[in-house]
Every structure is written in structure tokens, then in C-alpha cells.
Length: 229
Image 1: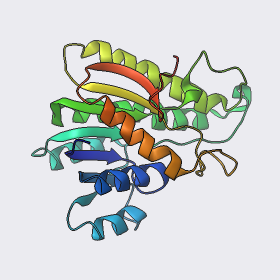
Image 2 (image 1 turned 90 degrees about the horizontal axis):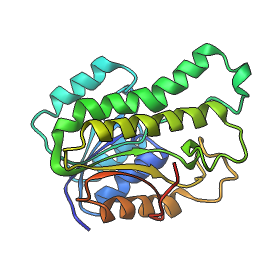
Image 3 (image 1 turned 90 degrees about the vertical axis):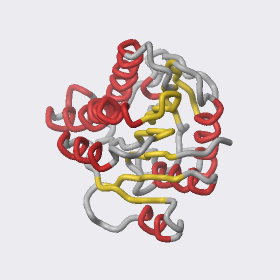
Image 4 (image 1 turned 135 degrees about the vertical axis):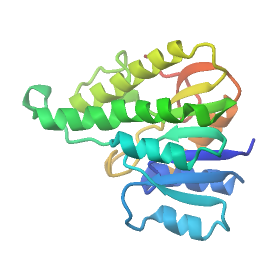
């Protein structure tokens, strides 16, 4: 397992906090972001980390906050930039979805992660990794059940935008990963999801580490299996 510096965007709770915790336990220096100034589990992790974990404030839906974070981290080199944050707004048929809700989910889940990646990519080491938490619900070919229309669409849009990004920067040596953590018991995944966070996140980190140094984009799950587009 390599070590380095990881920036986890959206690390206040659930999967993001577990990612920060896992990387810290594996010897990495971790920078985690939270929205606002409320106390979170990430603050507790930072206090117990002897300086290895630090907390930054970021609402990634606000471009000026992304730019400010970029300035604050200008002298850092990241071995991993990973964007975790995402939202869902209920299982509503698309014809009944209010426009404001649709825009909110799309901006948060698709546009904002790519703005973070575009803004912070220059901080990532030449052979470092850029990853985003996606979902098998973003797979067009695996959508055989329907439901969660807007969330699915936002993750499909994210995947498409990341593919465009990979083409635009095809000459770069960055490892680019879209990661499906599995169906996990979180507020987003629901109480009946088959996986616990502890079953998912170590596999996510193992998968990221296994592909370190491999240029180009892959869509993988927490078991290092390819997810079809």
C-alpha cells in the first residue's frame, strides 16, 4: 500500500468520513472537506490524528469556495484527489420532479464534482489519482429496474462528463477512476442496503491503490470489478 497525501471532498460523515478514516489508518496525510463550520466526525478524527488529518471548509456547489480552497492548498501536492459528496431527493418519476429539485441534484452530483476536478487537477502529482464516487445506478446498461430517475440521471451525467474530461486531458498521466461503492447502508443508500460501510470502504481504497499509476479512466466497483457504462 502506497502512502501520500489525499484530499477527500465531502468527508464529514458516512462514506466520505470512512474514506478519510481508512486512509489515515493506512498512514496517509488526509485533507477532508466539510460544508460550513459545524462540528463533524471529521473534526474528531483530526483531533485524534496527531496532525495527519486536517479539515477544510468547502461547499462545492459554490465556485468561489472551490477557488478559495485551491488557493489555500496551492503549496500542497496531492497524490489522491477524491470527490465523494452527492445528494438524492427521493424516488420520484421524472415527470413529477420539480425543476428546482432536478437542478439541485444535477449541480451537486454532476457539475460540482467536475468543477472541483478541473480546478484542483494541477495540485495532483503527475502520476497521481483523481477519483469520484459514482454508482452502478449511473450505468445505462445496468438500468433494468428503473426508479430513482434523477439520481440515476445525475450519476450518468457525471460519468459522461468524466469521460469527456479524460479525452480532454488524454496526454496527462493521471489515474482517473469512477468508483461504485456498492449499495451501502447510509442515509443515501437506505437502511435495507446489503452492505455496511465497513464492508465497502476498505475495498474502495484497495481498488484505488491497485490502479495507482495507471493512466486513463476506468469505472470500477469496490471489489475492483469493471462496471459497464
